[in-house]
Length: 247
Ligand code: CAA
Image (cartoon, rainbow, N blue to C red; front, side):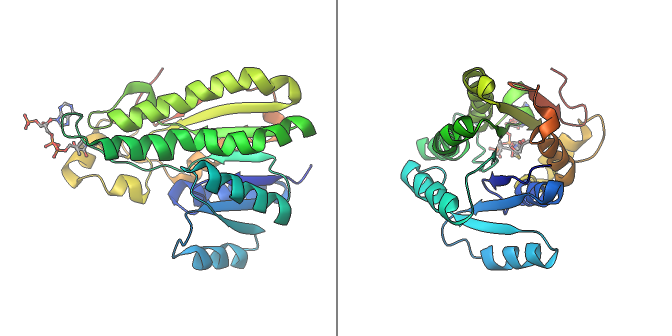
């Protein structure tokens, strides 16, 4: 088994942390977790990963900004090595009904959740195709598949990342690079815990499995799509939503 370098954007958040742990465990991959410049909990996060024996590095960069992302990728390549596995996981929410949504709320979500996928992938994809191996996994969402009241921005961005995956998958598969999306439902993270309590209770009641997902459940799917054995899967969007939406 070949040891790979994996870059996870938003790698120090709820799903991101679980993905870092899972990828670091698989083949002892070297994991690079991205966070925003100046992220206050970075050192504490890195220390807890090192304590558990994982080889994990931090990479500061604003993935919603092309230049910041390009500089971050160049630093990662120089200090850790070329990126073999990219997990486009960084994202934010700014929920509001469209009639109340500001341009700033729309732009924040499109920049961080959709333009970020272009910014990071554009900076690593040529290296993957030149070396003849790569894995790109985009974090989409059940709400990109079915739409969600109060999330025109987020649903548009999450549908967009899978459109991107399907197009890029066709461009790079003959060079050994797969591009897929995963579409989680509601996962027990700070993002979901920030939903108003009454609204969240109603949402959970509507999920057939009757509970939130654990971040580790999403991480194991990401790890499979990032593995050698998933080489025939490309352009796929794998739902992992407790039965909430069956496409
Ligand atoms: N369908 C239809 N009508 C709905 C509705 C729904 N799902 N939700 C609310 N409404 C109705 C309400 O009953 C209310 O009607 P009345 O005015 O007649 O009383 C009206 O719409 C306004 O609703 P709110 O009082 O909730 O409006 P608000 O402005 O206070 O809040 C909101 C709007 C912020 C969008 C809030 O409804 C909310 O937080 N919704 C949840 C959004 C959500 O699921 N976010 C997921 C975040 S996590 C994530 O995105 C991760 C992932 O990938 C899954």
